[in-house]
Every structure is written in C-alpha cells, then in structure tokens.
Amino acid sequence: MSVAPPRTAPPLSLALTLPLPPGVNNQYVTVGRRRVLSKPAQAFHRDVLRGVERARRDGVVTPGVEMTLRDALLGIYLTFFFETPLRRDLDGGLKIALDALGRALDFDDRAVVDLHLTKRIDPLHPRLEVELETIPDWEFDRAYVYLGEPADVPAPDETGAPPARSSGLQ
Image (cartoon, rainbow, N blue to C red):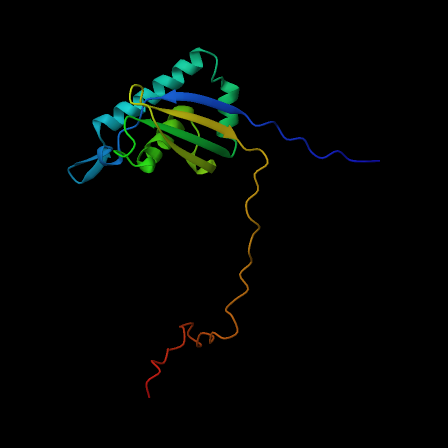
C-alpha cells in the first residue's frame, strides 16, 4: 500500500498595474516632532487602493483571493517602469509599495519570503507592475541549535560576567 504525498494548493498569482510610487526622498515629511506620509505618498496609497477596488469590481480580486493572500507566504515581483534610466533608485519605492499593497489587500508584508525588483524604462507610461504569488511549499532554512561557546573561549566568571580580556601587554 502506498501513501500519496499531501497535496498542496497550486500557487495563486495576482497581477496589478499601479502608478509609480514617489521617490524615497518624497515619501515623508516632518510635522511637529512626527514623521508622516507626504501628500504624494498619501495619494499613492489612495491610488493603490483604487486599483485594488477596480480589480475587485472586475472580479480579478475575489474574497477567496484575498483570504489566500492573507494566509500564505508570498513572493512579490515588482517591475518599476521609470521615465529615465538613472534618475531614481530601484529600491526607493519598495517599502511604500509593499505597505500600500498590504493595506489595500489586507496582508502582512512580513509574509513576503521572496522578492524581486526590476527596473525598466518607459518614458511615455511610467508605472509599477506587480505580481503577487502564494508560495505553498516554502521551507525556511533548517533551524540551528546554539551549542554554547567554542572551547577556546573562556567561560564567564561566577557572576556571569565575561572574563576580563588581557591587552597582551605585560
């Protein structure tokens, strides 16, 4: 008698096209003693929410898709289409894009275990293309067990303090 391996759900994939987020230097402002999202960053968050709401109306984002994204480990693939090749850093829009997507789709960006960033150029149509994918068979690296200090390191004294180190000068 053979036992079949447990079935895992096939990966779910969701693709969205969004506006470009503001550059990292334009995402926050100081108000009093607090750092808050700038007006362009707030507008980006609203635009992402509108894009997700449009995908919901079109049947692309269903409650089942959202539940699956919320409960899964995720791979996220971000392709930034900039107007010019060297004006912006590739990673400057990463955090705000993940935060806005997580808020709009109600997932925790700590569930992202695979992340890809790509820079492309499209001077006439700058945008951010996003693909989210569930990763049902992800495995973290094996766990490592702390076995204590190596043999050549002196043990702490009776108070628990590390031994005094000699400067080597006598």
